[in-house]
Length: 393
Image 1 (tube, one colour):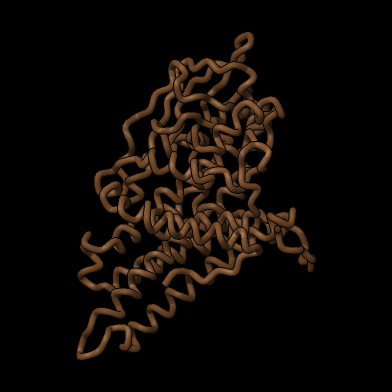
Image 2 (cartoon, one colour):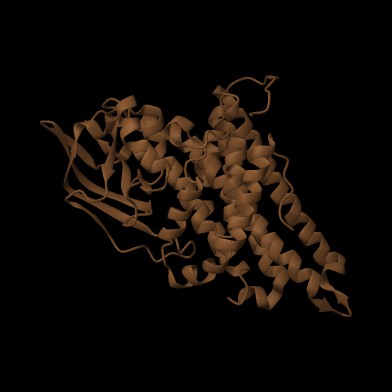
């Protein structure tokens, strides 16, 4: 039973219907084989780019969709309900474009952003390092100025689309001044000295390749620096709030997909002469799953509406990411339970959904980090307020 939605405009409702159709007709036939064989679905991203789905939250003047986040996140949900690896990929691509869209010069945006938003160039995001996963200020990758270029040396871990992307948004140290010594670069994939380790052997999201990227004397023209020297961490952290909303939406879609499969099974499977859905014990489990999905969706959309209104939303983004990903873990675990022994086999997709849900609690800032962010906001964040906000059109 797919999610019921109320969209701000008829155009956005039409878009969601189109996305649901694409997910059902184009993604669903591919997902099981691609995930089982760990194949990266590059052609799927090209198709989504041609359809206009890779640049939805960015301005129309650069080829984006000019879409409100409230609608964009529901697009991510619909994709992730069928194929989470692709949902994560769309979110990561959007995050990879963020630095250019918000901190690039007009010349830089005109030169590169249209191809990125059209999906001709697929993006990846290089922030984490093996020793500094949740502490980006401790990064060691360097970018040293050499005439009109920067020379990058180091390694970036846990890079989604690593080895598959056409460009990498890279944070590297340009001085020893702690968090203020980090700068942001847009690095093309074909530059000399940039290599990718083999993909990590992961528990889930196996269609999404995650690698360590190695920078060995990678020379990048100075015009590929985004913003001023020392602004890199600020650019990265500004993008993470939006990225956390993306992952919250993906986790919500994943949970919706698991619920849909569990409910369909419970309607058809019989025990003791009745559908198992008609047994109160199991009906209560499914009711709790439904409530958890709704809670995740509404928490995420509340944060999106704050963002669309131009209001601070960092605290709410962390709450959404924490809530949606913890709920996804619970819902997918319960989906396996509803199917019983069948749920533990690969004949049904719920065991894959359960494996995929776990990483949602880890990337874009672990849920322990989200609790720290929320706690800081409780002491320093904006006071409660009542704000009028007209729907986006």
